[in-house]
Amino acid sequence: MSSNLIFRVLESQVTDYALGLSPQFPLLDFLDRHQRGDWGMASGNVRHQNDDAVRNGGEVVSRFQVGAFYLVIVSQVLAGFARSRITIERM
Image (cartoon, rainbow, N blue to C red; front, side, top):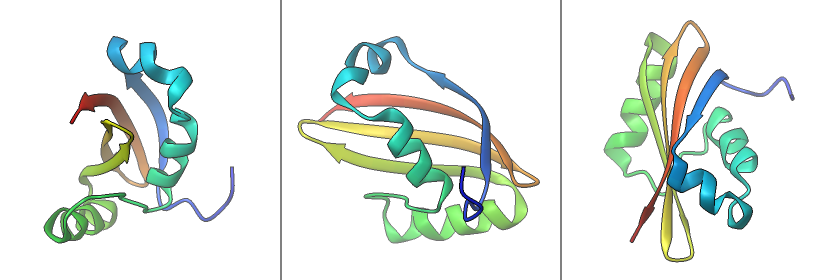
């Protein structure tokens, strides 16, 4: 991994639905973007909360549109490391 990660995901849980669709979605590419501070389609308020959570600990949320789906990554960040949950939602 590159050194420009703003936090590092140590463990990630992928829902069964997301795992079933994973051939259509490069999950690791999106997780990499998430760790670098690319929050995708997250609103301005969510972006602000994400930035604060990276600095102080807390929940970071990224949302990426892929075709008719949203890929959602939620991480709990503490001291630069995180546990994440990856889900895919139909629009």
